[in-house]
Length: 146
Image (cartoon, rainbow, N blue to C red; front, top):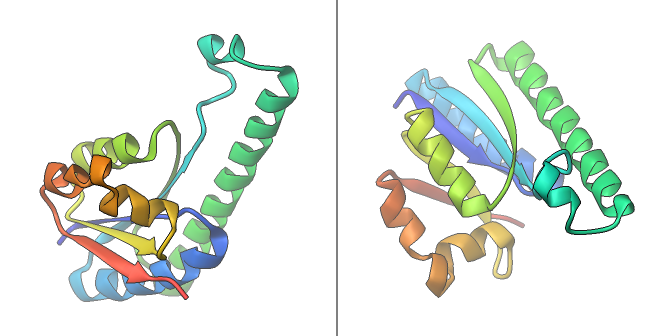
């Protein structure tokens, strides 16, 4: 196992997911990719025509905050565990973004959290999205979030 993808939705859940990913990375000498998917990039020209300015400003702020959070995780893990790690903040649809990163980065395992009505859980359990696991063609480690 060389590459792990940790799909993060919320900061409070990220700690549980990262604990598992770090343990696996230590055992396998794998690289960790932390990924958070945001709404469409407000700098996209086509998206700008779809709504009022405050929507774009809010999305830009959320994306900036997500990028800062991911970078903070990356630095903490590098410093504390000496693990190869990179962070990604991508705008777009979550399922497509996960599939794209899995293919581009040769990911061997996706680590994601789930709650009964959690967004990430829904991606893997909802009828219209259930094929994502098959499309990935790699294991998914679903961590129950408390």
